[in-house]
Length: 167
Image (tube, rainbow, N blue to C red; front, side):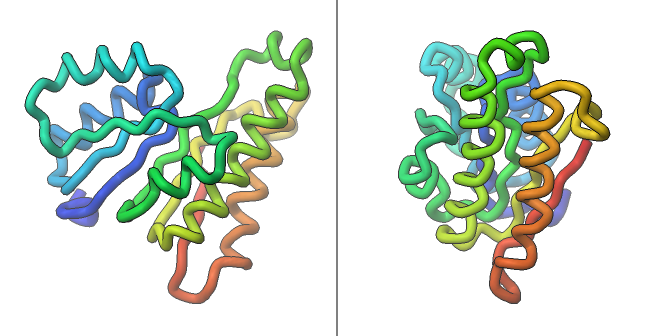
């Protein structure tokens, strides 16, 4: 975890179950200068603030990955992004396909573009096994997002933002 020492990390969907675990891990096992929780859930952000009272490395930024301008503001001075934000319910996706495309695909594209504009060093996008040979809309949106992240390495300038995907 030495590479995080003194660096700033932003987690999209930082109030979700994985986001909360990442915040806990980063604060307890590395020495980041700042951990930014980016999410659209103000109640969960409030709950997290009470869980870590007095933790001056922890910051909260209310926003949605669908809003590129808000992302760009949140990414100022950020070194690393862990992109965990997505709509994830397989059955709900089948009845709300537009919302899944807007969040999982277009929202991910917003993360990519904002990260490049803010000169973030590294973005790690979290994927799912359902993106491998997708059999449903959720998997298809996550596969599309995965491809966007990987292909963005061709568009980022040399020495610029690097993108990766983990499952």
